[in-house]
Image (tube, rainbow, N blue to C red; front, side, top):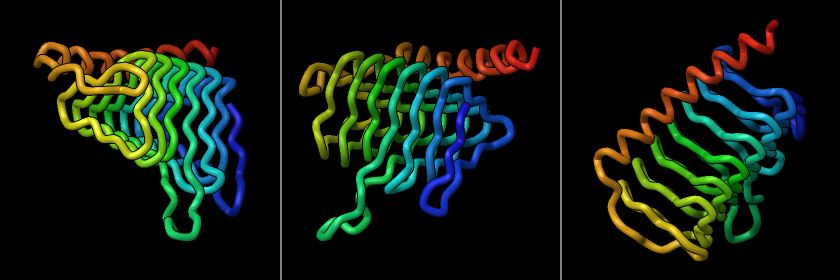
Length: 179
């Protein structure tokens, strides 16, 4: 793991968070309790802030970035990721908001100004175009992503089980890395 201070900000990690070797956190990045940032992820809070909630996992090779403030849009787009969010391998998450218990599939892209509400899911390989919103409990897929259907209670429960799985898996990896 590499923590790089930039622009007067240093990455901040809860002591119970797991950040795997090879991950790079830059600038204004904050990681919550029992969150896990997996191998070879890059979280670049160089021109805006990144916040990762408790028990969220960002899986191997994912990139999280932000959008710069600019005239007419003074706040830019920070990346705000809630609690118990699942982000699959090789995802690109950029200047957006992911509410608690949302899901971003493998290789999916979430662009500036997007929002995925609680329990919403962006399917593997999908692209959520700038400014789009996935309402709570809906599945969207495709490039560009479109509404497919509402998630079942069983699918939403499976996603929460995935959160618990990654919390435990992070503990196992931490123990293995400590020798």
